[in-house]
Image 1 (cartoon, helix red, strand yellow):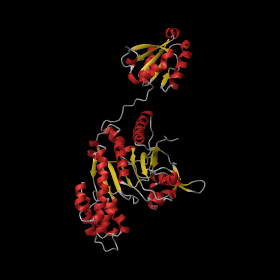
Image 2 (cartoon, rainbow, N blue to C red):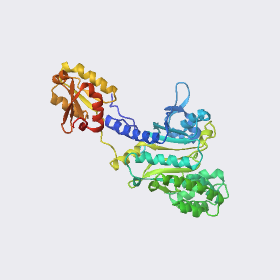
Image 3 (cartoon, rainbow, N blue to C red):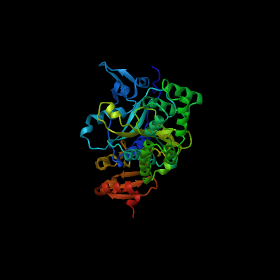
Length: 445
């Protein structure tokens, strides 16, 4: 039999790797809960039509899709937003608004594995539904920032670049672009930073084929609009246009809220950000690492029509997604990943079979109190057992020998500085809870 290997684009997590991904989940989950979001979870396998309805048939080539034994066309989920829209839509009429949901799950996309992009990846999704105003957009952008700051990153480590498809649609209308072609034009705008002049000119000509708008004029006007790099720049471009100026009132509310929350340093106005998916309807944003390869860390925006499009009620919505792959790369680069430390709080060193039943009684009580406790399954000498305890990652040992058992005490030992203290077995639970919180000094005057 040939050697079994992990499939391309998939990962396996040894305990030290799983501890790191667990840390990432904990930071994400903590930030979301502090913002009042509630955790949900969609199925891993969904009907294929759920994803083609949102993104079109062309998405099929990026999916792990197949026909199941019941003849149904299904797919492993490539993202969670369609599932969210379906699940919220099914109960939206009876739910208090706004709805604040978040999910952390593994998604699957059949694409060529490369640095920062795998076929299986974990992603945080956070969404706020039922509130149409810019206060909801500010809350989501603030949560995105807090999900990064929670790792010990600073606002100088990343930038959240904010744009606005609503402003883009109104500007394109001024350039003579029909509403039904605006999405195609924005697909060209999405490539302004990386496309060659010839390729962009050809793509714009295709996007505007058969309409009166001049592709060269539209492309030039799009470049000028995309160059507005501040709120003041937007104001100059909007001057004299009532609909554009009205939209800037929403921009002011958004930026004022984020400024009040102390996030100005990590924000930037960047109209080159339009997000490639057609269902986005208003403010959109992407978070990028600063320096290095400036890779994207997160992205999102407003999608007011998607819930209704997937069969639910007309419900405004805004949200974002953040993947674990590029985030972990950035945390490693900035030295923000914790050292692997997944050991027990305490290790019971049991010296002799006569002490075992007493020690196991205490171990059970400590575990029920919420402490992580391991113990030696075989007898041995103290030195070897202490080495085993330290190798397991324990900071403290609880020593049970014949003398300790006879006097109704246990000896608590710090492996870091070798300090020891005796504790009556009747006081062991509160004493060790204090040691976990304050260190061995909690027992030594």
